[in-house]
Image (cartoon, rainbow, N blue to C red; front, top):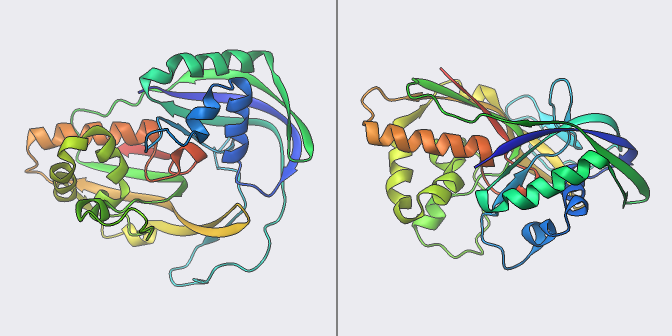
Length: 280
């Protein structure tokens, strides 16, 4: 599954939206065939595409209205204030991951961006042009004993145990503790649909969270569709058990590679769950 990085120039506008919406609008204007992929009701879940919001060119911090909770137990309630408008304009990075069948549609969108696009976004007329294109290597090393997962954009974890217990799909309760089975549940489902339970157990056993994990992950409130909603950011470190069987190691490498390419959790096609992974 390819992962590409685009550096784009964006003309000035002001927004209160999560800028994943803007990136999705760019791609649908560049290739209208992608609209059915992003918004079609008959599309499979999870969707075969993931995007990021706009990322600052230098430090790649995502651009969106947010309130980050920096101290455990602080300000647990939903924010009451309106978000401050964000001024957008200049060069930004965007990552796009997709399944192989979308190769031609993505290539067409990228090709059209090289010539530049102009479209209405909210009350603004916006111009976007591709500056650089890069294909990202997401190979997981054969041998590693630890892994750090950096949640660059808010992660919205999907509960694997709801699926295992055959709970009704309308149960939308969220999970927030970054246990490996919770973090990577969507990736396991994408890759090992027919052996979902076995690989959830395998992952839960093989990756052991660091004792510092509750110091390195935190909550962010992000503003989306007129509401403040909670997501997970920061990073989580996991250790690979020394006696993990080779077959389980291969499965975990596939899961981690998929997470690098397609993100984690739900909302990946809207810009959520973008992770970077470093191996030790």
